[in-house]
Length: 526
Image 1: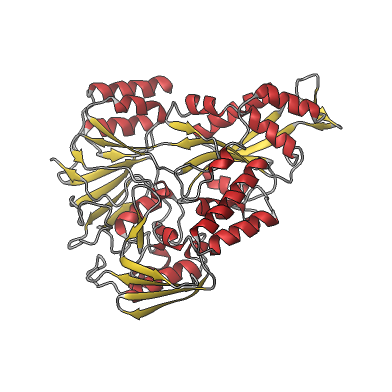
Image 2 (image 1 turned 135 degrees about the vertical axis):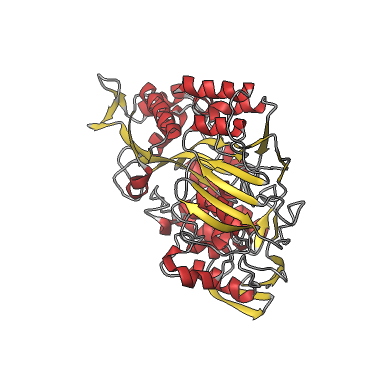
C-alpha cells in the first residue's frame, strides 16, 4: 500500500497523469467520504458542514484568526447589560435560492428548530439556554436567554445554526437535506447522488458574503463535491485536472505536494482539530491518578506525530491549542513530558511490580486497560504505537477498533477503559463545556469525569459577561484536568488545502474542520 501511494505521489510530482479535465468554470472538490444527510440540525459530520456552509449562511462568521467574530447575515448585534438579550440587525435584500426574501421570521424558525425542534438535535445546546427568540420587525431579531451564554456569537457561526427556508422543511419533512435544500448561501442545491457526487449551482444575485472575503459574490458557476475514497486515486485526480481542490490529503503526501509547482498549498495555522486518548476515570486500573500519570509519561507523542502523521501533525503539549480563545498557558507546564524511565519508577513506587511476562501486577490485579476507537488507518497506527509504548513500561493495552457504523454506539457504553478520538472546537469554552460537564456523561463526556469544581467553573465561564472572569474560570478547568491526567493530548492535526494550477484564491479556513469555507474568492483560469 505504501509503495502504491508513493507511486501516486511520483505521478503528482512529474505531472504524467492524464484524464478528462474538469468542466469550465465548475469547481470540482474532491473528498474521501459523503454525509448521511445535509440538514444542519441533524448532522454533526464535517462532510455535511462543508457543503451546508456553501448552501446556507449564519448570523455570525469567524475571521481567519479563528477568534474574531464577524458579521454574517447579521450586520450588527448588541447585548443587554445582564447578558440575556441579544438584538441582531439583519442584512436587507437577502434571498433564498428559490427567490423568496429572507426575514427575521426565518431566523426565528431556524434557531428554534435547532434549540427546540423535534426530533431533538444532537447539538441543541449550541443555541444556548433559549427563553424566546422573536422577530421585532422584518430585519430585527431579539434572542432572549434564560441565563447569559458568553459563547453564543461563536456558536451562531457554526453550520448547525444555518438559516433555512421553513417552506422547504415543511414540504420535504425528513427528506430536507436529502432530496433538496433551500438556503441563502452562495450556491444552491442541484442534485445529490449519495457516495458519488453532490452538485451545486451559483446563487444568482448573492452579494452578502461575510466581510472576511474579498468578493461578496461567488466567482464560479457550479461546484461539484465528488467522492473518491481511495487516497491514490484522489491525488492523481487532483494532478490530472479531474479535480480542483481538496483538504483530504494523506499525511505522507503533504511534503511532496508542498514542492509540486502544479499544486498550490494553503495552510490554516489556527486550526483546532485535536487527537487525544481519554480515560474512564472510574474504571479499574486507570481510576488511579498515579497510573494515569505514568501512562501519560509513557506515551511518545512526538513519535506518533512523526510515524503516523509524517510531520503533518504537531505534538500536543496541552489540552487545547495555544491559538484558541481562553487557552491557559500555565496548564502546559502541568502536562507530564515523555519519560518512560520516570513512568516505570512511578509504577514501581505505587506497588505495580512486573510479572514473568513483563506486565505489572498489584494485589492480584493486572496492569491492563482497553482502548476503543474508530477503525481507520490513523487511529489503528496511533493505538498500536501507544500499545508498544505501554509494553515498555510494563502495562498491557488491549486495542478494539470498530467500523464507524457501530463505533459511536460502542463509545457510548461503559465497557471500555479508555478511547482514542479527534474533535474540532472553536474556543476553550466550546471544547471544555462539551466534553467535561458531569451532565454530558456517558457521551460526549466518555471519561465519566464528574467533578463539582469543574462544573462550577464551566457554569461560571458560560454565564459570565466579563471576559476576564470567563478566562480565569476556563484556566482553572484546564489546570485541574491536566493535573488529573484525564486525557493524554496526542497530536494537533494540520489543515492543508491543496488546489490545482487553474484554481486561484483558495485559502484554508478551518471552522469546525472545514477547509473550504463557502468557496468565495475562488476563480478558475479556464
